[in-house]
Image (cartoon, rainbow, N blue to C red; front, side, top):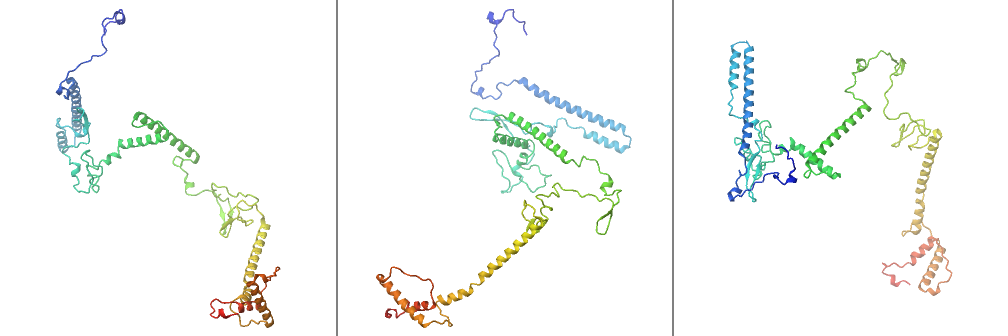
Length: 427
């Protein structure tokens, strides 16, 4: 507050005072560990002033309540019974000022306590304390299999009395506080920070909590705007039945002044019939020269067009000519299938003939020509000689695929059976 110098201090080098006062302390062993070191006793006056202001406000409030009761007592003139009741109320207002309402005490669960550490000790905060009059949480349920109590953190996450009446329960477990109040808001804030970081935003809840909270607030504002904009768009397109005007009773009850007469078949005889409401899909739209819509015909588990009986969706309508061509093609296909089935059934006789010729069992009605059989036997002997001596085989060999029954019988007669006991004595 002094008068500015005529000449600056940097020109005269006089009266240059330090910016702050630095105190030097030389403390001994006990002085370093004194918890009241550096404490200014004058600061405790603020605590006293705060408590005195609270007591004064309480006295003022009680006095106002007493005056209010006295005014009500003077205004009422309903008999002695009510006067006696007012006296009892006045006696109840005489509250001991030394007794403090526990619900109005602030920060009761936060207690400053000296916690010794290896570094010489520091002031820590011990939370989660209980009022001494209340039952300890680990004594609410003495069952061994009940909720687990951690003595180090003094926490019991689960509910010790899950079957008790919720209105009578004093303590419901620490998880009850984790899903209510500001804990739930903090949880949603953390989740939003994680999701934003995964999407590429530079956000970190522990490094910059204020930035994360601000971004979360902006996100909620933008989300509300988008929801309101979408709601307005839907209401503009489809309308809002809640805000529209109330329909008249004539429309609600289905009554009108128009008279419409019908016959026994349900056709309109007189008057105008009400039009049926149409759907959002296109109706009576014919494409590719069709005279009926798709789905107007059903056959063989397939939908089609009734005008041409086609089951292909984007086909071109061929009309009655297409129906006739389709019927002819179906008849032709049936005839071909029947012809094929008949041709597959006829070869049974040839198989019997072939069995008679080539089978191992000779039928009884088979008649062989003896002359042809003798020629076949000679031919078989000649063939066997050529197989034994290849030099007798001629250069040009004629081969005939047709085998007569006599040749087959000669082959059977000349054949050597391995299981025949007399095979070594033949020839």
